[in-house]
Image (cartoon, rainbow, N blue to C red; front, side, top):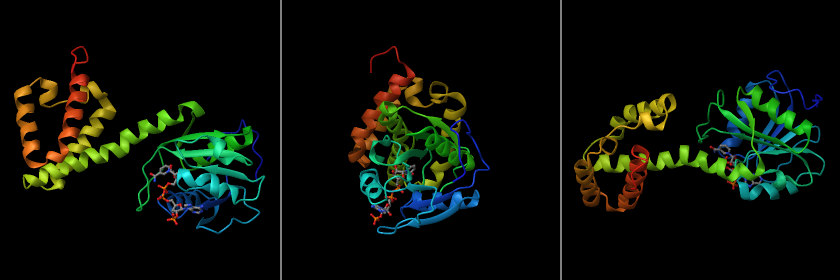
Length: 252
Ligand SMILES: NC(=O)c1ccc[n+]([C@@H]2O[C@H](COP(=O)([O-])OP(=O)(O)OC[C@H]3O[C@@H](n4cnc5c(N)ncnc54)[C@H](OP(=O)(O)O)[C@@H]3O)[C@@H](O)[C@H]2O)c1
């Protein structure tokens, strides 16, 4: 491995021998991106396949609950990383350990990591430098997060990405009851996300709740109750949270 002294960070020219374990969503996408970035990549490896001994770093792209098991299958003393947002490095006990969590959604179709943030961690200065170097080589922005803050950080990521998809799925279902295709919603969703990014939540918020038009909100709620009653709990929770955002001084 090219020696890193722990001060050398954000190193896009770094070239390492990387093994990637896990053939789900992240493993193939990360292996392809690392290859494009000039690293020598082995994998993505499946269950029971072990990286070559000359590997500089082994990156586990397996579910959080499997990280300890997958790490225990590796010979001790290797530099091993996981890609979990929620877990600290304790899951990799017995190894020099790093964390590399791309703050990006990766589907079976892959992902573009460039420009995204990446939570990095290292059990040694060298491991941290490798994590920073790998992130930078993929043109991600590395940042450190304390172990005790990880669960909250990962919860924020789930709200921002996963729960957003759940909300859009509910919108799709309601639109379908009115004969409106999901494609009609796409420009609205894109503009809303861009407005939130550019303006912040308070200024991005529009619509009947923001206007205080409660008669319209009541008509909308009645339509939800009629067309998709399974969505009423979600509707009520979101309407309450939206009122709090629009008028934080008024109890919901
Ligand atoms: N997807 C994302 O958007 C994303 C983004 C950032 C970080 N991550 C992190 O990446 C990690 C993997 O997530 P994912 O979304 O890629 O999960 P996933 O799509 O469910 O894929 C996990 C893969 O790991 C394999 N696996 C499980 N145990 C294994 C073991 N002991 N040895 C080798 N392979 C094993 C699974 O194989 P089987 O099918 O045989 O079980 C599956 O192919 C998680 O820590 C997650 O937090 C994911």
